[in-house]
Structure formats: C-alpha cells, structure tokens
Length: 164
Image (cartoon, rainbow, N blue to C red; front, top):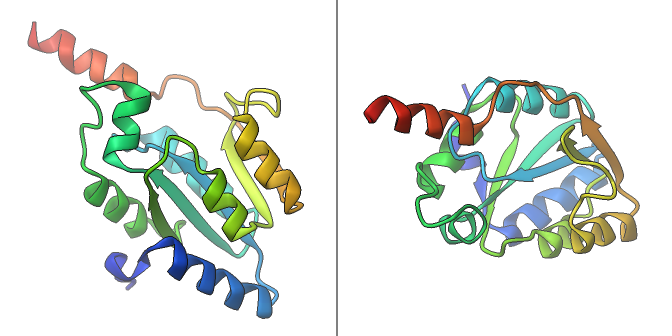
C-alpha cells in the first residue's frame, strides 16, 4: 500500500522525479487546483486524468493562494490535509503545493507531457501565463469532461444554508 506522505514533494524534488520519468520514457500528466473539499467530481476527474499517461502529479494551491483566489473564508481544509488526501488516491502519483495564485513557474520547471484541466475551461480561458508555460514545453493540453452538479462552492453554500 502506498504511503501518501512519501508522495508529497517540493518542486525541486518533483523536478528530479520528472527527470527520472523522462529517462525511463514514462509520460507525466500534470493538473492543478485548490481541491478544497474533495467530491465525486474531483475523484472522477483525477481518475480520467491519470489515464492520459503513466504518472499523475497534482499541483495544489497553498492556503494563502486559495485565500487570494476564493476569499478569506477559504480554504476550509488546510493545504497539508488537502495534499495528503490527494496523495492517498490511487490515481495520484505525487503532489506539490505551490504558493502563487498561478502555477506557471511549476509547469515550466516540470515540463509535463500532458496537462489536464476540467472541462469548464477552454484553451482561451486558461490563465495566459500557464498556457504559455505549457505551450513552450510542448505539453499536450487536454480538457476533461465536466461533471455537472459537483462543486466545492455548492457544498459550502448547502452547509451554510443548513446552519441558518
């Protein structure tokens, strides 16, 4: 059984791991997100993304980064716990936490073979600096089918409504 703690890497460690994958002709898939409250949409998305290559690395926003993007009430789950939960999934090979609101630096360093993003995004709506980092390393960009009805924001709203 895998140990999730051993799957949590710094960016420098992930770059070394990436170099080993390349030497062994293994295809790296990368995705990113907040993954604040894990739900079925996340699980399905990660399972499908993992099928695009040999290894799946998930870049997750740090707590400070999530607050900057989603507001002061988020994240609900700490970065350490979110990273551990993701790393515990069979479909996820490695997890790296990043501090900026954008992960273009990490994408440029990792040079993935494939970048997967949920189907509520398009090439035009990807953040420009992230898209440029992916295009400069020749990554294939794949948009996964979006599963309607699953959203962390909706879960938070439902919980809030039940407390009123």
